[in-house]
Image 1: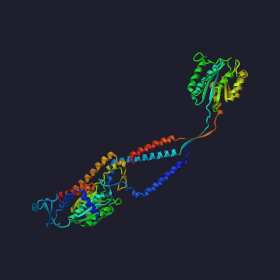
Image 2: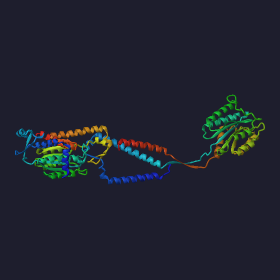
Image 3: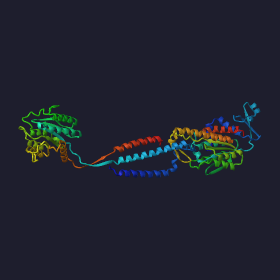
Image 4: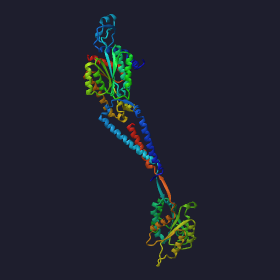
Length: 295
Length: 333
């Protein structure tokens, strides 16, 4: 099983401290409010756990905080919605491949979800169509899902189509789920907004943006730069233009802000990560935001 | 203007065509691989939608086309340079640089003619190149005023001062007759001519045409060591042509008198010429005629001269290459 999932787990422990990982676990657990009253066992409190889950009597006996764990009333389902178009094969803001960050994020959340006994399914898609994979819980299943993402995202892949992906999920996914949407710095159109609005009615939406490369700053690295959509090179002469650099940075920042604002208005929790190192913390932030949103 | 390596432009065009063909083939084959070297990025519309980007891109394209033009013109200049642009001229080289000895009889009757001769040569000296002029004056003895020289400034100053002296009959400036009256008699023309002949260089001057402009009226007064005929024979032996300018008095029947005829015979025997100075002829026109007669003798064989002219192309290519490098730096290719 030394595959993608193993790598994701390794990276999780590399990039994040134990504490952060615990935080993430707790954050994931507390996102769901609907749970059974069948007491399962006690475990040590980790920051991020709901305070009301603390078993005060047990804590008093034991000397340190313990929280009650319940048997999940039903399996929750996590749906990974990953944009696997050509765009995702491009470079991220950190210089890593966006694909690696996407796999990292999807794998991290999926492994936490399966750890909680939840099932994970995958919907991938690009311009050529959308593909769904059934839910599963085992590591082998997760590995297969991650492999799908890995194999589909190439520079020869069809163009990205986030809208088609969202509409497909809105149409097909009927069971109430937590949806992690992994995409990049695109612009939200009205169609996106309406699809998200429909999705939001039924599901919990987590929107993870993988930051795109800063087109101008990479000019200093000297390597040629080209756009995956048009396969047209962006000349170094243009990219080294000072006033254009300033203008681009402003525009890029405005676009990111606008997207975040739009998603917030929709009630969709969103976060933007730029590198693999930010993924664990980013996911935690995302879950925290979701919990605070009071759903 | 012609090309020595006329095939060079054709070869260059051929090479360019072959190069373009190979490049297109290679480009086509590696088309799908081409975009793999470099950083792939997405959502470049964040950049390309900016109006500023279009402006910068327009400027970039303008620079690129300028670069293309410069490179093409520079290669053209380079091809022309390597084709050896040359001019083909047929020249008749004036294969000589003349030596002219002015040999002036400074007896009283001649000063007027002498003044005009030195004046003419003083004027001519401005336009000379490589020719040498010497001045010898004689009466009963000969004085070499200056030897054959191509220092024209000096020649002119000397001739001018002698002209002034002749005009003023020695009243102002130098006394032109100094040293010319040491012999017996006056106007010893044979001696004077021989002195002038001896004034030329030694044996190695064989290639330079030698001529003497002899101004005299040929009225001998006294007994010279050499007669005029002997002097002329010496000149002929040394390959010196003697041109005589004689302010001759034509007699009533229009034929020259006896002394003039003797002078004419003598100078004609050297291959030179005799010019009577009548009212219709001026000294400058006679000097011109002498020049023409000399030039006719010494025109060399026709020669084909092919001369390369690389300078303009080399300079143009250099400047264009500098320009191309500057543009390359500017567009960061």
